[in-house]
Length: 93
Image 1: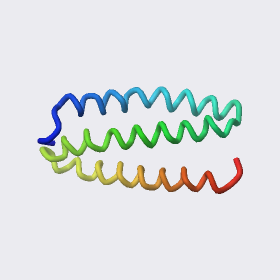
Image 2 (image 1 turned 60 degrees about the vertical axis):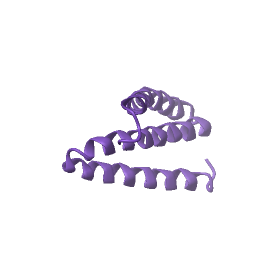
Image 3 (image 1 turned 30 degrees about the horizontal axis):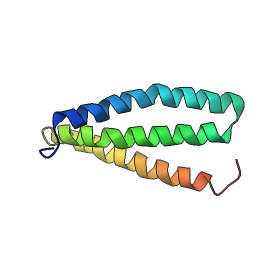
Image 4 (image 1 turned 135 degrees about the vertical axis):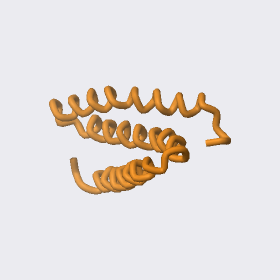
């Protein structure tokens, strides 16, 4: 993206990399303890990681059109995941 420097994209990519072990850790806590807060926190971490990865891939997709499929897939995962996360607040944990 021309308006953003490579530093912003690097920070977003590093944030995405940090969310991977954070998600795994929170998901393990949620699975072992059956804690609703850990499940919801892991969902939020996953969704923010996907949201951070979209601009990084979008920047690369401007040079390589084959990556547009990946950008679309990430957007679908983000929308579907956000809908499922919001829906989880409506039913008891």
